[in-house]
Length: 344
Ligand code: TLP
Image (cartoon, rainbow, N blue to C red; front, top):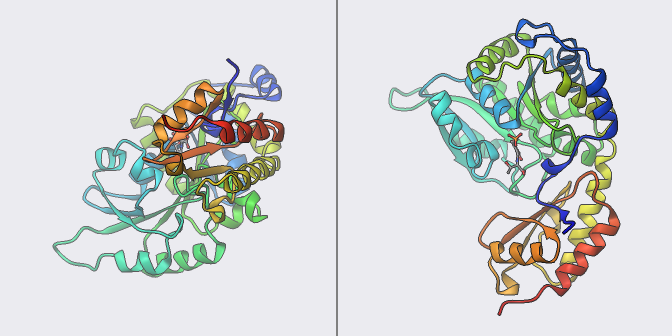
């Protein structure tokens, strides 16, 4: 069966232009710093985000974990949102690899306020861990692809400067946030000391993320990437696809956002519980309790009808729009949702 696959934007495949770029890519041993294509990608990512340096990593998870390793020491505390990817979905990596503990904070639709963060910052006290890092997620995955308002980021930056705590943004979907907010990514990245963004999601590259920050930070991160086994050799063949992604796949993310809104509005009209205010980018999360089915059963029925989605809670279902999903396919999905057999 030909599925309409809305499980994630990670399912996107490299475009023809990317495959051609792979074929042509000049390569070298990147652990020796000799892969010109990787160097070009790292410079491009750093330039776009307004940072001094970049590091090509295997995945968003590796980028986030290398960032935590580089910013912290064992026994530190990392402030993050309660449902953030770095805490929720990274296999307790920060505890295991960095030896830090997470201080998880409640948010409003994935967005932490400066006040909430400030209240969690530890005083200097022999009993308490050091607050060593603030992690933000933009867009926020489990909140439904929500963006940080720039004023909130500015307030958090001010607090971070006052308290001398670095800020890391998990910007797996940073370009979605920028396109939705009508700004270039550097307008968001300026508030963070380090940013991780994925090339392998909406930008359609097959593999990889970039971690960007100061020269000093990236030099440290490069050592940790090596420690984790992420020192790749002729990685230019994959880096080439990231360059194409950054140069030609950013603006089209707006189509994914339009399709997500279309889908969300139809879901609301069809009686599904959905908070339309969270549908700001390419993620649509809705509640299926009204159908009498749990999310996992609902998703299984959708699959039988040719649509792939993800269960992200007992009654919460996630659909993600991406390259290759057209408005016509969204209409088909809506039709399937409206005619899905109910419980029993
Ligand atoms: N998210 C994936 C799954 O892991 C849930 C998805 O399908 O959305 N930060 C954020 C905010 C993410 O959404 C993801 C991936 C990552 C980091 C990790 O990226 P990868 O999968 O490249 O390690």
